[in-house]
Image 1 (tube, rainbow, N blue to C red):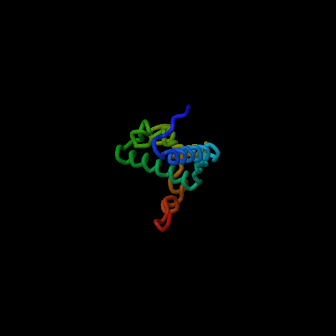
Image 2 (cartoon, helix red, strand yellow):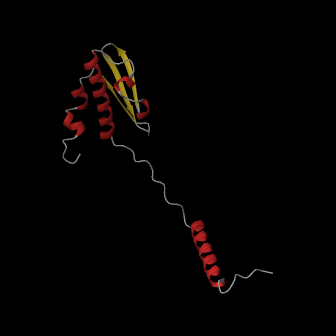
Image 3 (cartoon, rainbow, N blue to C red):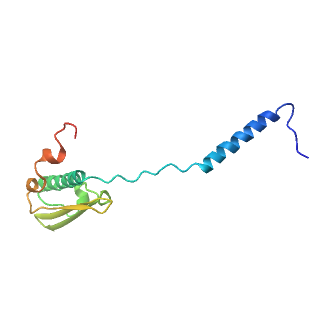
Length: 129
């Protein structure tokens, strides 16, 4: 035999039970929220990332009089998408790879401004970029 709640609480229990059933049912029937797809970076962002990496290598070269043997000493991290090859004492190749597989490489035999253009074009002029 079912147990009756004491003195007039039956309507409250019924309402709470119905609310639990409705909320639980709605949760099961509604589709899950959409998962945002990763936003691919555009080519300008890739170029900017590579340019900033090149500036770090060049700053290291200027301060230390030589190229770094490893990019990490120039504060460039592999996990951020960079790869570095020190070809010889004056020549290096720096590559930046996006998560989607696109990549861009800079060879230090090419003058920086010839490869990237003027700094303002890569970094923006500060007006809305």
